Image 1 (cartoon, rainbow over the protein chains, first blue to last red):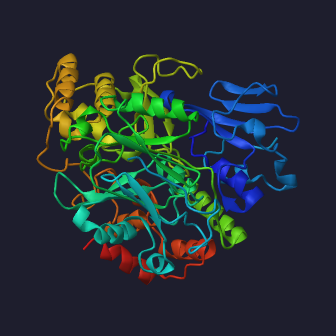
Image 2 (cartoon, rainbow over the protein chains, first blue to last red; image 1 turned 90 degrees about the horizontal axis):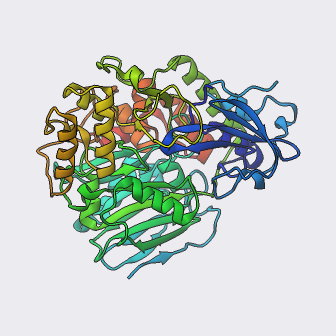
Image 3 (cartoon, rainbow over the protein chains, first blue to last red; image 1 turned 30 degrees about the vertical axis):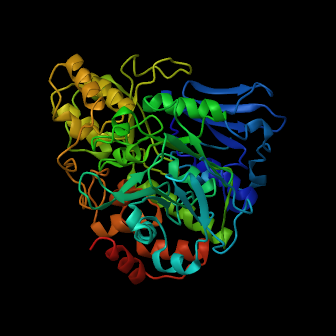
Amino acid sequence: MNCIGCGLCELACSFRRDHAFTAMRSSVMLRLDDKRHYFGVMIKLPGGDLLLGRPEGPEVQKAGAGEGGSAKPILLREACDECAGEVPYCVRACPAECLHLE
Amino acid sequence: MYGHARPSAFIWSDPVEYLYAGGVLIVDLEEGEIEQEELSRDLISSRLGGAALNLALFEDLKERDPLVIGTGPLTATMVPGGALAVATLRSPITNSIMHVPLVSSLGVELKLAGFSFIVLHGRSEGPVHLWLHDEIADLLPADEMWGEDTWTTTDRIREEQGDERIQVLSIGPAGERGGSIGQAVVNFWSEGDKVGLGARMGQMRLKALACRGMGQLEVADPERTLDLCITEIRRAKEKLGPSKGIASLMPEADLKNIVAVHHRDSACSGCPWPCRSFSKFNEPPTVLGEGLREPGILLADAPGFVSLLDRGFDAVGASRLMEAATRLGIEPVSASAQLPSDLSSAIGKLQELASARTGVGGVPWVKGATRPDLFSPFAPNGGEAKDIALAYILGICPRYAARMGMRPDFYVQILEAGAEIETSGEMLASLASSIIR
């Protein structure tokens, strides 16, 4: 995948919700193991499942599988609403073009 | 003896309403006391932030020879390259005031934890680490960490606090001994410290600074700010084109057999330019699966890696040496000149350098670095001195600034939209000039 781990998707998604810079309100999160340089993104879908964008390929993980690794895990966040019909903020902000809306 | 401070509100608003977090945290390591001073609008108006404001804070306490760590107004925003924190200190190598860039996500987490500026002074009686989170500053004992390598310390802090995204600036055994070869390491990687920040931390008995930010930065005009940021990201994407990691950063360097270890390229927080390459030398570098045991090494310090290649090691050997140096907290460019050509002997030499108070004769020479008498030579890709200075003030990575240039019109607009700061290209240029005289 093309992800470069910059996290602009997190900031953009949170910005849409709060009109402020934070990474705590996003429906998309970096999925990161920085010591092993393993990274990608995960998006909380309506219903609670997670769409994982991983180097090995995309995967949908069932709700409650315990992803996060953060002080505010993705399970506690709002689900993606695809920006209610706008071009999603995360897609607009991604400099690596690794996020698309299909 | 250990301090604990919590300023008032979680979402900061006064006296500076937008883009700045909290006030100035002052940590007296000798007394173990912490206090917070207001960050005045006057100071912001005259110095903006980053290296310029750090210098003013340094001057206020210069008789205590402080270490100042500050962020810029654009740190932790969506402005491309806006991940920079700056450490300003009297370099134990040059005995002059110098600035060290701190990247990855350290500046972002620092600011979102509620701390735009930190001034540390004095020497702690025992080893300590500073843990910054939720507008709380805890100065905690580090006796158990003292003697650990940087990787162990980062792992320990993240495990103790239960968050894998905590950013840790730490020193290893080399820095603990206070010799000027000691380098401060961000998380697991050698980065921008080539002027003895690690040694200074060791002299202060400060093992680590850790931070995690769950706050937010309010913005004056959200719609315009977002539009400016998205437009600038698009502009960057077009100008940067496809990146090849450190090969893009140092296109003229002989990277030898780097293909044998080259894994993936990555960027720091908020940066569209992935100028860092990851070297996997314990496993096939093309394997991308989760849960691999061997970490490898992020070549965030490209000049350090290239100095080891130039010393005669291949990409595998240079990667192994980068790992050893980083764990021990040794600045690799200075160390490379002292290493024997045999790999195992070279690793032994690094351990020897870390076990003594090892000094260096000068700031390591990095081809292409701009004003290495003022700025730690982290960016080997040049750049106009005024652009680099402005980047250090605003919180923009100097490598990104060197690659893209700093367009005053954009920064004037974003400061106005984001923080209601009225400035001009001439004012920004004048402020930048003031720190590079």
